Length: 293
Image (tube, rainbow, N blue to C red; front, side, top):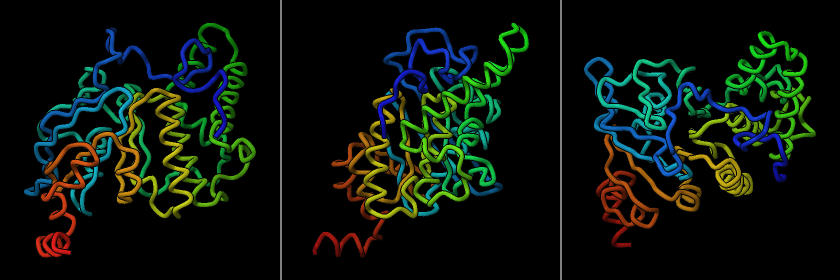
């Protein structure tokens, strides 16, 4: 990736910066406040409890991991955080602002963006148009200003195009800007999905199994990209991932789910040594054999 120069996401004092609507973010000094506070979240589907008593706080530039066996409830947590589901109980605060009753679009404008397990690009659209779709938070407001204040629709559109191209350049994809998204190799499609999520100007980026299907070289590149995203855009990142080398190598804090409940939290070293976590992943016999072996 190249260094971002002027018009990138979340860099201050730039006219081209996509950014969540400040009308949805409280006016206070949030430099040291958590970007996310999830308190005792739970959700039931019929008589089945999918997530119960989930509590997690994420700092403003923290890289955190959410791990657990298949079916543990990890993606359900992401769906709760982004208002795909409304919790049966508990609360979610973004920048100190509750998300209760808000739509997915409203939560996005508050500062959360996500990627998905299965890539969800607009395959028939160009790479740069996919990024511009992700800029909906700022582009909509810029175009409204163009209409109401006479700035000019075309000028606002050119600004969006310039920002999208610079973001692609930052991720080493500028030469692919006008290629069809569906024609990209798998790893490049994964990267594009992250670029599109960043284009909304999030405070918190949720990555759902970003390394799925990647080879070791692509995974190593992804780790470097995640670090540079955090350092450049100064945002928090929460990722779901089964690749433990990636999780242990990049996350500062890890939360472990099993059957919808948090069974452990801590640093990578704490989690690797936690017998409850080992048992959840390997089973009692496997954990015993692993300890004896």
